[in-house]
Image 1 (cartoon, helix red, strand yellow):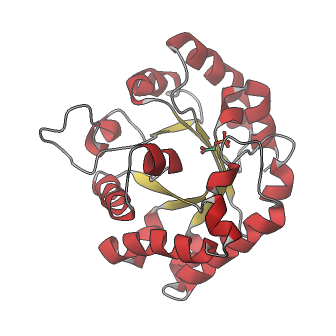
Image 2: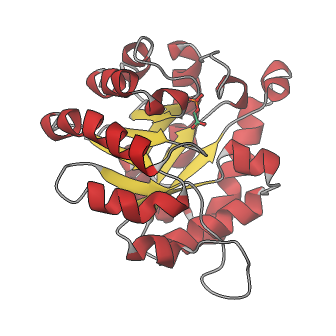
Length: 249
Ligand code: PGA
């Protein structure tokens, strides 16, 4: 059985004080909900702060992005080794905002995935189609390209120690959530695509849904057989919302 996973992506939000309050607000639920893993992804500058605040509770944390390089003259970057040194368990790679605003290609995302695994982090590979792709029936084609870039570089077996987050771009931060049926259809496609290459990996890998997940729509999404949890943006910044989402598992 796959362990359900709820991840909060805080994006470029927070101060030391608001982060302390947020963790205080959610740690009780994370501690008492034994069958679900709860992860928060702060901006990199707050990783050490979060590492301290999660020492004595069940919360885990991850980065929102890492460099494809481990060391070198790459001003402004943070490496997977550095993030790992502070105790992170995960890192997102290829979040759609990175692809869209920072021009990350499928190949670059694949290299970040590899760097993360080489450092001992679990990469959370974010994939998803644009509205235009969906409207022109290219969703599966786009997702396959995004997945293939990774399997071409590291092989399908690498997904044994990775997570996939399906995040349709039209649902991120828009309040327009995919229906449970739409999400399940895509999750099932992703799992079948993996199954055709490696059955063990396909059954093992957690596939999260992301895009306007809220406390009031999480239950329906999480009830789907191939949805193993959520990657949550806006609602992860509000204690009651995030707690509600964890409890919906
Ligand atoms: P959202 O963001 O929940 O605010 O739509 C999800 C994400 O970007 O991971």
